[in-house]
Length: 139
Image 1 (cartoon, rainbow, N blue to C red):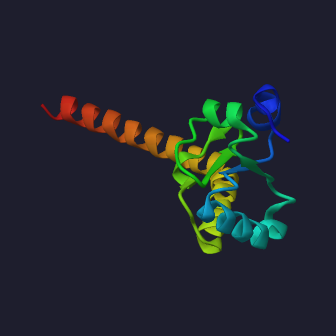
Image 2: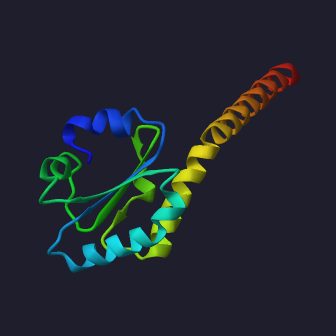
């Protein structure tokens, strides 16, 4: 079970993406969220570290991560919170699946997207230089 003490090594330094679902035993939407997560767990457990934490048993971790809504599912990849994929409040299995898939897609395409961005920036810089040279020589 993940703790405040093991968070850095287990989530931040780990290459495997992580999904942390924060729930409470007294919260009905949380209990439904756990069932939906269990429904799709098999598809992702070899690709993700998936943990469910009851905020009453993991209160220090919940405080550290500023969990204010229940249920909350946080996604981390390559040591960073994937805010765009996190889920706040109850989300059905389809939404959970979408967040898992988006996190995987972003990880797989991060280096490719970055390479294209730099190529485009380089091409635009070259166009700007050529336009500047053309403008200077034409006057």
